[in-house]
Length: 465
Image (cartoon, rainbow, N blue to C red; front, side, top):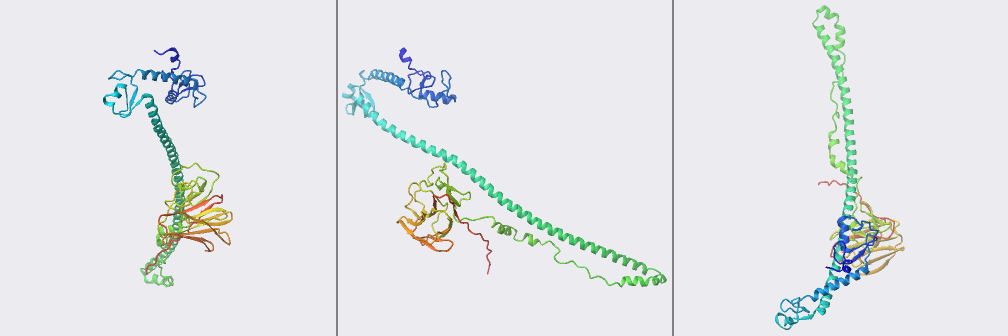
């Protein structure tokens, strides 16, 4: 039976001596873990005894009480240790065998199975092994912190995936609604044209049929009257002959015939219908030779919805720190890389006063300084400079600031060139043997947008010889 003093140190929840005791604002004490379990299970932050709601979500430790409880626990451990005896020799277990990892008595150390083993006094072994276990525990705690940090990143990434999916869904739906509107309007325009032609040619046919019907009726009357006259007696026939003969000898109208072009021009409405609609649709769509990858964009950058323009934002966005994302330079990488061929893209820099254009290798790290695999033209402070893995900086002199810069990558020839897109004036060319995939690279620390110029779309029908 515990003494009255020891009972006062018992936690009301676990009915044992406090371990890491905390104190609530109502002055009641509980074990730290007991209280958190109680709050978690009950989904409440009230005191388990008086039900008063705690004013602090993280209650403070009661260090005075902890000192008293630790003393009781230590006394318990010492008492338990003094009671430990060897089951073979009934001697106190005052030694520890390092080989077998077990407590032994003095007799065991001098003879028997432990005579040739490494043996330490309990206190000595306890300190030594406690230190080893402490080091292992620190390693586990470090691992736990890493796991929690990675899990936190995964939680952020999972949330961002939903945001990305929602945004992409909205953009896809908007784009298809726009295309559907165009197709609906195009369909309606062609149906209206067909209906108008049908009404026009139906009206012409109706008028033609009415005129022919009148001519048929008049001619039928003449034929009928003449036939009746031919059946009359001679006197009656001759009496009306002059008038009948004049009717019959009237100059006939031109023989009726069906005019050309009276049918619907089906070929005009149906011929190459889908091609003609597609040809008109090119005015509605645009093509960008470089699509910026938002998963690589620095949190300070804001990309346009079509992923072809960028500018420095008004503060860091809350984005996952995924391996692809650039975290030091305010930049973004293209979504598609090149391993062969000739590729070019024009960048509308306008009045932007701080930017970098170029290409970066696939293996180049995205974290920290990313210079080792970066070939670039930099404009800053009114000056132009070229930099590459083998060139820490070379000044470039230009007579005027280009509003559009053409970047030309000739992978097979090992050249990366920059030109003034308006005048075709050469700015600089890097010569290097490319051995891995190269990605377009753009950086800006200015609020003035930079945009990848859209390519003109043309539809060409190939002629056969």
